[in-house]
Amino acid sequence: MKLLPAVVALTLLAGCEAAAPSTPAPSTYELPPRQVRPDETALKVPPAKNGDTEFTLIGLAAGLPSITGSHAEMLPKGQYVRLRLVVTNTGTSSVLFDTKRQLLVDDQGATHPSDEQAMLIKRQPGQFDLGHGVRVEFDLYWDIPKDRKPVALRAFGGPTITDMQNVNGTDIKL
Image 1 (spheres, helix red, strand yellow):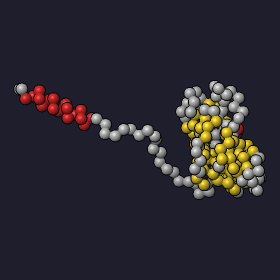
Image 2 (image 1 turned 135 degrees about the vertical axis):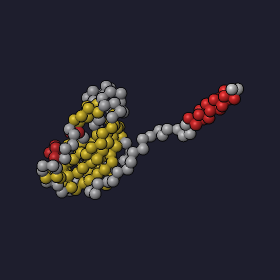
Image 3 (image 1 turned 60 degrees about the vertical axis):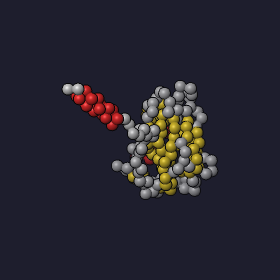
Image 4 (image 1 turned 45 degrees about the vertical axis):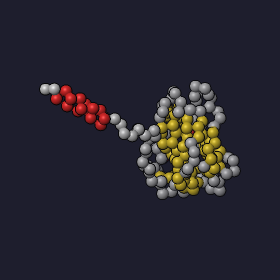
């Protein structure tokens, strides 16, 4: 009988040692890499912020001769440009994000609003509530003259508690 308490104590000690974590938890998410679309170039641009919104540009396709959706094909007046981006709300409250406010800057300094018909055909979002800590990935489309090249995105994150107007965008070079 005197042996039983010693066996129980050793079993408990062995169990406690096995439960101790051997490696710390990772500090970043491990997202699997994805294939770049055939007509797209992967971008290696550092993230940029406007207000409480962080923008990460991940893909660019320029000179697209047409776009096709589930019910229509559309030709551009010039050329279509598609930008794949990730927006993340880094603030403490939600942000009303408007894809129509995002401007493409060309090599001659002109700005272009996103093409509403192209966005509709490709079923991309218009406005959405970007909640605290939420990350959304989508495409923006523009129709720009054939002789122009895209050089930057003028990004507008949305009104925040400190900037209710959000009139100043952030230029992100492509």
